Structure formats: structure tokens, C-alpha cells
Amino acid sequence: MRVEQRMSQLAIVRHGSYAPDRGMLTVPGIYQMKRLGRRLLETRKTDQGTTLILSSTAPRALASSEVLSGVLQAPIEEHAELWSDGQHPVRLRAAYDVIQEAGRRADLVIAVTHL
Image 1 (cartoon, rainbow, N blue to C red):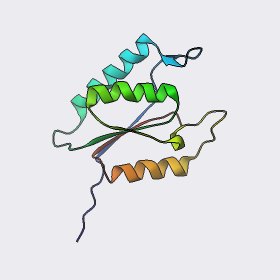
Image 2: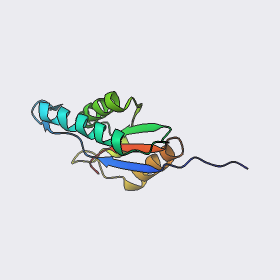
Image 3: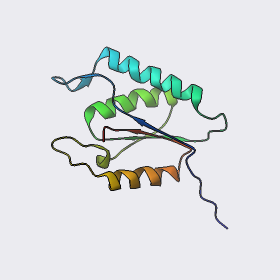
Image 4: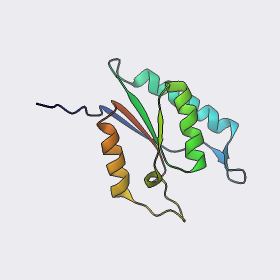
């Protein structure tokens, strides 16, 4: 009998503060993501095996994911389904499917998005 691994924790994260004119995280935005990464390290279960960061393809989300990855030492996967704005439609079912599939591979899934 095959037992599938299920995620035990899910964190849905909005990107850090950024400068819209440059499309980059600001210094406070970088600090926000580092602080969040340390907080996630403190709160995740001690038996937590794997962490996976899912990022929208928006540059500010990717930059936020990179900061989190540096703190958590976790891989990042990019998914266009996690990006919604005036030019990218909301695709909730597709985003849900991405998160659910990741949950089969990781104990802690972090989705950096603004759906």
C-alpha cells in the first residue's frame, strides 16, 4: 500500500514591499522577507522534512521568494498560475492544483502570490 506524503503546513505569502517604478524589492521589503523566513524557521514543526517555495512569475514575488529561499535553504518553483493582476487573470483552480500537487512533495509549502 502506498501512503502519500501530505503537507502539514501551508503559508500563503504576499511579496515584500517594492518600488513599482523599478519593480524591485525595497530595503524594507527585503527585511520583511528575511524576518518572515526566520519566523517560519521558528514555527515549522521540528520533524519537518521538506520545504518548497512556490512563486508567482511576477518579479517582486520571485525576489521575495529568493530572500525566503536564502533563509530557509529551500528550492523555488515558478508558477504563472500564482500571478494575478490586470494583465494576468485569476485562475484559482489552477493555483489550487499547483499547491495541492506540491503538498504531495513537501511538508511545508510556501506560496508567494497575491491571488
